[in-house]
Length: 254
Image: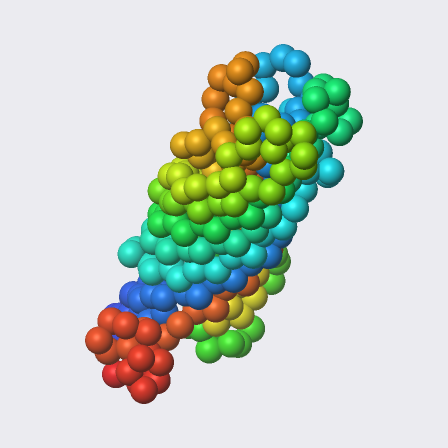
C-alpha cells in the first residue's frame, strides 16, 4: 500500500512538472489585430479645462483604424517580449469642437514599429493542462478560468505623413516626419484552443512630437497622444530543437 501511494505521488508530481513546462514547447507566438485609432492633438478638442491624456476629447468623428501584427517570445510563463508593427490613420478636425471657428482639419497616415514587454498579472492555468495541450476537454468549463490579463510598455518609433485642408496648409502645416513614442496599455486573451488565442487590447502612445496633426497650438502644454483599441488573434508556434520556431527546422520539435 505504501509503495502504491509513493508511485501515485510520483506520478502526480511528474504530471505537475510536465504541465508547468508545456508553455516552453511554444515560446513563439504570431499575433495579428485590427481595430480603431483615436487621436488627441492640437486640432479639435472639446474640453476647455484640464484634460488628462486627451480622454475627455474622445469623439467618434475622430476615430479611424489600425492594422497590426507582431511576433512574441515567451521569456518566462508570465513575461513576453514583443516586436510589433502597426499601420493606421489618425484624424483631427475642429468641427463641432471648442475651436470650430478655426476650421482646421488633418488626416495623418502612420507606421509604427515598437518593442514592448508584456507582464501577465493574471495567468490562466489552462495551458498547463496536458489534456488541454492535446485539444481535449478539461475541467476548465467557464470563460473566466480561460482568461489571461496583462499590461505592456516599451519603446517605439513613428513615421507619419500629414494631409491638411487649405486652412491648415496656410498656417504652415508640418507635412510629417519621424519621432519616438512610448506605448503602454492593457490586454486580455481568451484561451480557446492549444494553438491559438483571441483577445482585446487597449494601448496609448505618448509621442515625442507635437506635430502629428501638422500643427501645434501656442497654448499647447504637452505632446500629442493617440490610442489603439484592437481585437487580436494569436497563433502559437512550436519551438524547434535549436530554440527557433519549428518551421525553420523543417517542422521538427526534436
